[in-house]
Image (cartoon, rainbow, N blue to C red; front, side, top):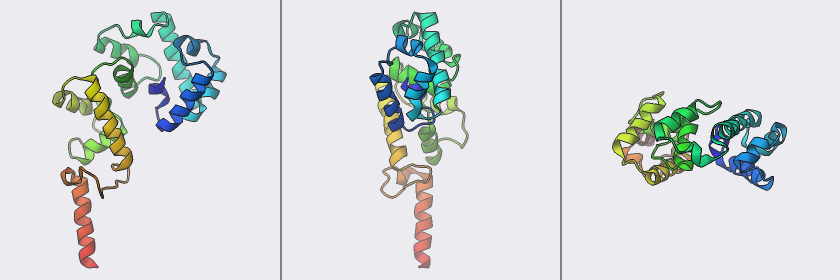
Length: 198
């Protein structure tokens, strides 16, 4: 549920929606499948785009119930590539959401690429703006051991760095990557030139 609810949403808002789902007894696959759409929409409202997310959650729950008898273990039984294709075929699940489900719910060694990851790689000069998702993901797959615990932690650290320093408008001062970052070095040079004119 979190992988779908976090689409275009801050995690704090997703947590509020999940708390509401839990309080309403709607955190199981069966409950998600059975809850009326209007009730589900109201419960997930804090996550934003609540009508679209309700449709996505219902599509996932219907697939899980219809094809796997509501059993997540059965859903997660196929090998990773086949499971990823199955997830991608569902309404409202794109590569980032599918990979989040694979990594965080199924424990598969799949690196999740999000906006924080793309921004960091671009600023570090490791990727071009607009690079395709699978190309960004390939960088991690080729340079890190295939370990879901490592991928989970690595992604969490990128997200934290993206929230604290490498924002849309970067906060380069105090950034531990500044000296290795072309964007950070350019900012330092610009500040030095500005200081020279003062």
